[in-house]
Image 1 (tube, rainbow, N blue to C red):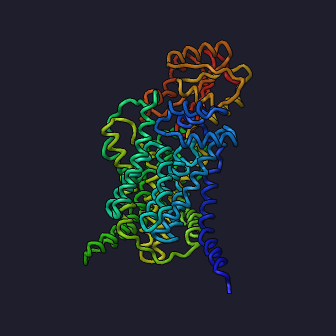
Image 2 (tube, rainbow, N blue to C red; image 1 turned 120 degrees about the vertical axis):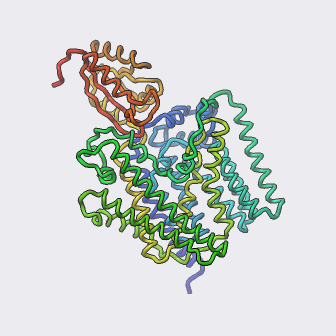
Image 3 (tube, rainbow, N blue to C red; image 1 turned 45 degrees about the horizontal axis):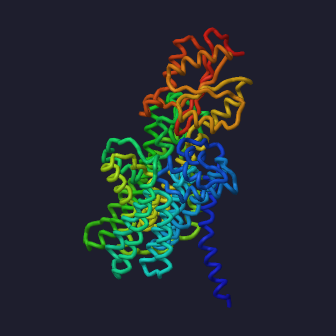
Amino acid sequence: MTPPSRDRGRSIAVEWLPVAVIMLIALWLRAHQLGRESVWYDEYITISKIHPGSLLETLREQIQFDWFMVPFYHILQYGWTAIFGVSPLAVRWLSILFGMAAMPVLYLLARDLYGRFAGLFAILLMALSPYYIYHSQGIRAYALTLLLGLLSGWLLLRAARGGGRSWWIAQAAATTLLLWTHLLGALILAPQGLYLLLFHRQPWRRFLLWCAYHLAVVATVAIWLSTLSGGVGSPPVEPLPLEAIPQALVTYDQGPLARLEYVLPKDAPPEDLSPALVTLMGLREDWGFQSLRMYAMRWLAAAYLLLLALAGADLADRLQRMLQIRGVPGRWLAQALLVGTLYGLLYITCRTLLEEPWPIRLIPILGTVFAVIFFVRPAKPREPETGVTIYLWLWWSIPVLLMYAIMFVSSRTLFEQRFAIFALPLLYVLAAGGLQRLPGLPLRALAAAMLCGLLLFQTRAYENMPVRHGYLPAARYIESEAAPGDAVIQHLLYQQWLFAYNLGESDLALLESNGMEELYEKTQTEAQARGSVWVVLLSRPALSGGGPDQEGVSEEFAAGLAERGMRYDMRVFPGMQNIYVFHCFPPGAPPEG
């Protein structure tokens, strides 16, 4: 007879083996070509303020720039760098570890509510998500905010549904750390408080104790914030249109693809792009700026429509049974929407994949998805109680709605999707629950494969392109091409900081310019004195809607050089912010070579 302990260990291994497989996929996607990523402004103000040997000095510097990121992450980062060093690559691994640790928490949350299959499906979506890959690589606190937010929400469910005192203590600890990681982590208290008030207010003493404790934590954070002497101000902003709310709720995976309109120059040669991006965008010989945006938005919209259709299938079926409606096929309407979405995706796939047979391209993607998702056969879907379902929808939506309300009242820039990063994965959980409502394994398999395929395509689309910006490849390019004694002119203050940091120690002379007229004058003077000079600009195409110090700068500078009779070679390094490198020569200089 097999000992019970051995059976239990075998059962645990069978359950967590597919979780480990998915996490290995996620780890590869997050670590693949990690060293190519430049340090951009938000990351610069985090990593450049680390003072080895002085934690207090580090925190004092961070507070001046990151007032909304309270010090818990910076303390952990300081300890990490004391062991592994302060290189960007080393610090990015800290965020990867936080992002990876969030996946088992999401699995446990979805598994406890809908079963093992739903848990696997939810973490597979997170593993493939460009949004979570991006923030799991960032030198910022958002991966830690994601981990603590998911942990706080899951622990609350376990505590409220019969857990003992230890669960409540663990939940309070996770929430406290969340609030001391990011100020807007306090947004999670709203859906949690509503859930407890509506469904678990008895006993009243426990509910009031929960409220009092978390109000005390919020008060301590507020007191700490009131002591800051700088860094807390930001200029007032105009309220965003109401359309920003649904965009923030469902389009958070847009990341790099939504920025393609200004990330890639209109004349970027297809051979410089990843094969997946060329395929995804349906590039032709005459492809242009507008067609590129059209294809990107089409695929993004398809992914979100499918996610909402899956989540809606669960909600429609539950509402129909709650209201005991007879003869109104709520679930079937949601399934009809889902089937229509799937056929639409097949049509988009056929049109986008040019003239090549589309099934051949889809076979490896679908095969990988099937192998991972159906490693464990889906069991009969669980039925979480109505209160839990409402809690999931509140957890997903309330933080975003509150962010918009705070921004509207305060006129401050507080409406950013990443500030609610702990709420966005709930759409994956709801979609995983809805997936199990679909009739028949073939339809469930098709929906799961199409959604995972969409996310995988989005992730692979920018695999050969730096996601943040091109400062690091630009610096490497200049280092390899520059002659001894060459100088580099950096335009505008923040760009000067970033280029110098990504360049590192160098023999190149770094010069500064803070206006276009000064830039022209210094470029001409240095080119005549040295024979040539390098100029580094951050610029977005004029149609991108960038700020006045970024939009169309490269076009304006090139036109100014032509007016002055100066010859130049230009190369663009695309990313979230494009970096243009000009190698400029004085008027009348003979062509190179």
